Image 1 (cartoon, chains in turn purple, cyan):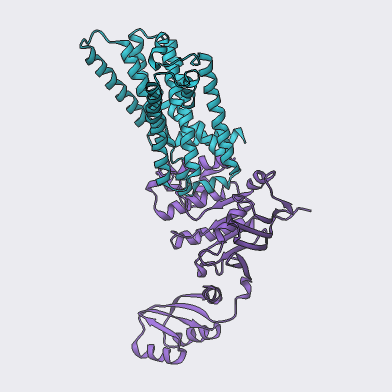
Image 2 (image 1 turned 30 degrees about the vertical axis):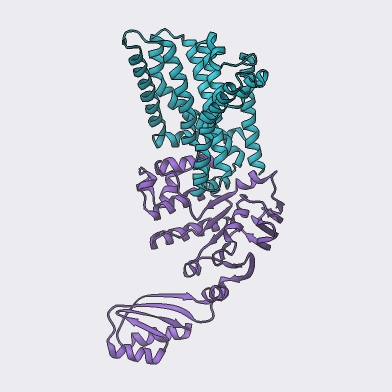
Amino acid sequence: MVKKNSLKLSNVSFYYKKNIDVLKNINVNFHEGNIIALLGINGSGKTTLFKILTGIYEPKNGNLLYNDEKIDKHNIIKYKSNLGFMPEFVHLYKDMYVREVLSLLANLKGYKNFNMDKILRNIQLYEHAHKKVKALSKGMKQRLNLGQAIIGKPKIVIFDEPSNGFDCTSITMFYKTLKELSDNGSIVIISSHHLTEIYGNVDKVLILSSGMILKSIDINALDEGDKNIYLYINKEIEMSLKVSIIKKFGNIVIKNNLITGILSTYNILELVKYIASFGLIVKDIRVESRILEDVLINLS
Amino acid sequence: MNINNIYKISIKEIKYNISNYWIFLSAFIFTALNFIIIYFSEIITGDYSQTDTRALLLSIIHLQMYLIPLLSFILSYDSILSEKEFGILDLILSYRISFIDILFGKLIGNTIVFIIAFFLGFLPVIIYLVLLGVSILILIKFLFITFWLSFIFNSFAIYISSVSGNRTTVISLSIFIWLFFIFIYDILFIFITTMFDGNFFSDILGFLLFFNPAQIFRLLSLFYFMPLDINDLFGIDVGVLKFIYIIISMFIWVFAVIFGFFCIKNK
């Protein structure tokens, strides 16, 4: 039987100064094929937790276990060979060319033969591979950062606030890459402040606050409750209709051809039907869960 | 400690310093300043066809003594710090590379970068000195001790860069250490020898020179270039300043550096 890829934090605590715990008694299991998001306000301990998961810091108490094997200084290097890490802030060598940087980092990771063109295409930098890093835009640099993380198809991939600087296309590409990694059996762990972006792209959300895991939420269970909606209509809505919609659905703002508001699933469908009855066409609709937002707002 | 990782980090340092033109810039500084020295020593003699080789060699030795530590500090003072600031250190530490590999990789890489820069910049000077009749063998020995000196001062810089948390501290400490070993130590030494007319612990005074790598460099250079004059130069009982002791002190410095790096790792 093929052993499943698993990562576990067991009673992990960490402090920088004694008696000031940054992480307190963390117990989490990560399994292959799952994309797990870590949410928390600034200072909640996300980055420290990531540094433990990446082997940069050793837990002061408790254990990090990979496939049930305790990770310590004797096997840390072996453990790291399974890792891909995309830090939040990294300014890669600005005077080097994109291709050179990827090849250098791959070499440091221990991969001499890897398909660089494939990675460059994946991260949409193939056309920019001849450029120096300093000539890249912020989003491109972030994609290069993503590129180094996925070299060698790591079994554990950790992304710390990855989508900062990404445009819409890059975000789509990023989550597609995440999905591919996850489908190929990698454990994918991500932290982000962009709640709406996480929703629909991850399987599970862990809420971290003051160094503790407060809540673990299965994303599939987030179907209930009110949602943020963004409805794009094919033309500007007349004043009389605007008044009628607001009267009927209440918590709604209408500007030009965009309707935004907070509605239940039932009312969203009703609204779409109502608009269509006036001969208007809904060009695009975006629905986002409010539960994650509510949880985080309550924490802060 | 993994030799393969140290090699990879060294190569990375070399590639990066080639890509940002540091090597070429410092090579130019070496050439320019050495030729300024040569030009002025010819002016002193007043005769462009007759160069005072002894004075010229002394000037060149002293110039390297100031310049090598300074450029080593400039090269390495932020080697760890900037990687911390840019997030590269965390990234590399998430690879299968340990901090001690990074320290040694940087030390070796930066020393090689320095050697390349120094060799490129000093090559015209070597040619000039050979034409003046200076032995090639002595020049090769001189090159080796310059490499040793850059190794030691690069390690100081990397050490400071690793243990200090911010740029201001790193820069201040680097300047202070450079000043201390190049000027303050010299002044204190001269002060003690003149104050007590060479009688103050005269047996061991010469040993104090071994605590300063720049002085070891100077001693050894003088041993190579003008062995007969060394006693006069320091004005002390230099019975301890034997060639073998100087060589031993060089090795002790190298071991001290390695020991220092292991201390940072454990910290």
